Length: 370
Image 1 (cartoon, rainbow, N blue to C red):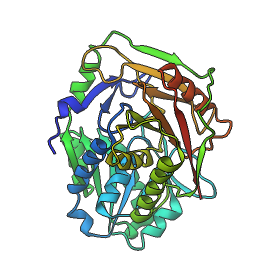
Image 2: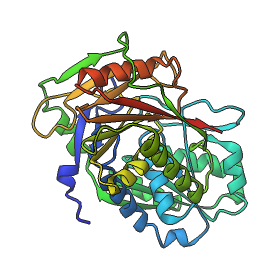
Image 3: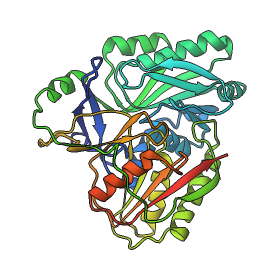
Image 4: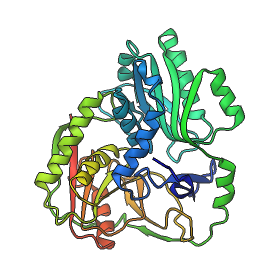
């Protein structure tokens, strides 16, 4: 598959972030920009193909929240490896390893400690998966934490990403630390830093935090679903996404096969992509993207990836802001979230945003975890 990176990626302005002025937006990732799920999963599988030799060992894939959760789960599926992700959410009855992501809007990262410790009895290599590695500091911090905490129990480490913007000095540090790097495309952060300064014409930004609207039907519930932030086997994840697809096909009254949006929430991205690909195979015209915690400036100039923004309450924490970009009109919309959807302010705000853009047939599925 040929990747035309100049068309796939673009720089956007971060809002009120003094640590880093830009974010690289990948139009095929299924996060900020609507994308056909098969296209997104093809890109993620291409990254997995670069890891096949390393995955001959007993490997664990660890993805980074929030934007790389889907990539890591797709890579793990392609390699047949167990997977877990970092999180910024609070999970019940678990202990964590804590570390931080310095340039992020939400810096705190956590990894479920007992799941990691369980894997150390058999894993020979941990493959960290990111959408973009710019300096490598977050992964380096986590590797050093693991080595300090577990010593000789630590396996080998690989840092895998779709994009890599590390400089010569940073790559040399990874080499000294014996962390191998695998990526699909090399980027130049200085180029994007200069590029975003040229954009001036602001796009539309809508604050929907005080606006509510109703779904076309009460939320559908997929009960007994896996907690995808925790350690899971690839066959179990595949089976659960197939069950989600069956629920959508059998229980939701989709009006036609034209322009169907499956919309994820924050860290919860992969099931919408996986079910969306199955629906594409049935002849549906499917797009996917997701809400995000990252505030990015919308701009209406040629080449800029994000033209409009909707500000919402989070599905997971009512006092937290989340955002949705480049929303369009579809024949049907299915919101897929692992948050509790009853009396959910974020869901009410999101439904209002969808209706503002001309969407009439709006449904939601609650991935109710075990």
